[in-house]
Length: 291
Image 1 (cartoon, rainbow, N blue to C red):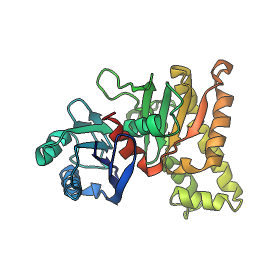
Image 2 (cartoon, rainbow, N blue to C red; image 1 turned 180 degrees about the vertical axis):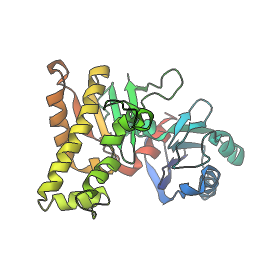
Image 3 (cartoon, rainbow, N blue to C red; image 1 turned 135 degrees about the horizontal axis):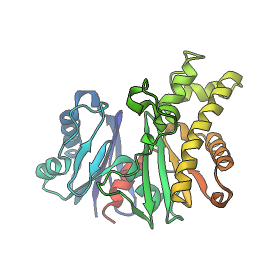
Image 4 (cartoon, rainbow, N blue to C red; image 1 turned 90 degrees about the horizontal axis):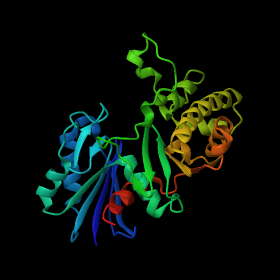
């Protein structure tokens, strides 16, 4: 089976031709131009799919809450304006007259890791990605758990800090407010304005910046507190952590060590592992929808 698989992110979109065994050909990456809105994003996708010849089906991974049964966006934040309600499956299927499947990006990444990556040996695991916010996926018996409305695993919106009337109706108490990469960058720039992204932060850390090291450990505490709660609720065999900052092996080791200090001893066999598929996790996970 020849699959055109795409992964729509807030910044970049990945697209390729592949098969159901995960063999990738003609991999491309282009700017999503998400600030121009959902209709523009999908039109660009249609144009890019049109550059491929002789394929059987289409698989799409995308940011936002997705109704995968009907292939539309239930909710998307301001990163992609006018995206909520977009009937992606119908739009793409009508253009190419091919079967189309659509799934949330973190769910797709979890499926990619299930079949082709770090989670191949686990039946029950969680997947969390740390970036602008925090995305999540729950895999039970090697199947996605989506909840009653199909939008389960909004781990970024669990509450890890006490509520306050002065804190935006409670939203600033969310896990991702304190443990996303955005949060780490905000903490770091308060002591060094040059720390505009994770790459700069870890470059400075490699040169022994003690103040940044203190910031990092404070952030790791926030990450680990949320993971500990997830572990106590789900008792997973593993948690797969992804996102650019989690490419750092040393960071994943710090998170695992701190998390295990926070959890009950009876949960201590859980593994915390780095996602292994990098920027191809989404397209591979989308393709796996046809397994």
